[in-house]
Image 1 (cartoon, rainbow, N blue to C red):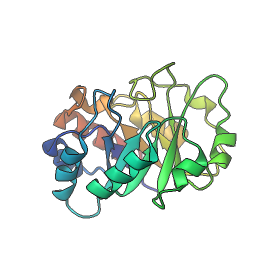
Image 2: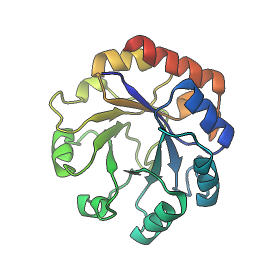
Image 3: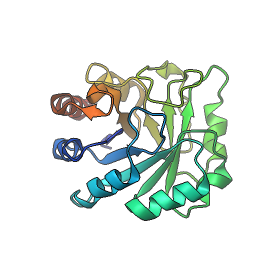
Amino acid sequence: MRTRVKICGITRLEDALNAVEAGADALGFVFYPPSPRYVEPAVAEAIIQQLPPFVTTVALFVNESDAQVKMIMDQTGIDLLQFHGDESPAFCQQFDQPYFKAVRMSADIDVTAESKRFASAKAILLDAYRAGVPGGTGEAFDWDRIPSDLELPLILAGGLDQSNVAKAICQVKPYAVDVSGGVEMAKGLKDCSKIISFMNEVACAN
């Protein structure tokens, strides 16, 4: 199966269109105000309205209120929800919208148990752990820690770029890879040449 690609932290239309042109399957919009990749819902809405068909749009939240999640869903028409904080399964599934759950690879995390706990999710995303930082660290983690018997499709994140994504795909065989900082010129601003190189490496690994 072909490895899917989500490019996260989209803040500009030109970056969204470049990602789609390069073959990205999904675009991520960060609705977490402390993040340098935060995008205003109105800006995300305007970008999404100008996307071609067959591109999945993903809204990333971190411990957000249910009212705010619903408001952003209604405003943007987003396709998929990504929860990157301490949300419970009950919180995540209350929106009647497909979602996946991010799990940070702390030393004591039980990934198999988390996968079972979020059985209602479409996938589980594994990201590097840094205390106090909910994601976007640009750091990789030890892929050998990933169980081989996960019940959910695996989205691999954390420190991926053109130099290591092919190795990651060959070793982990994830359903999808998720990249943000690895294709940027600055936080929140994508680099078209890096996007193309990343997508080429993914294609070569399949």
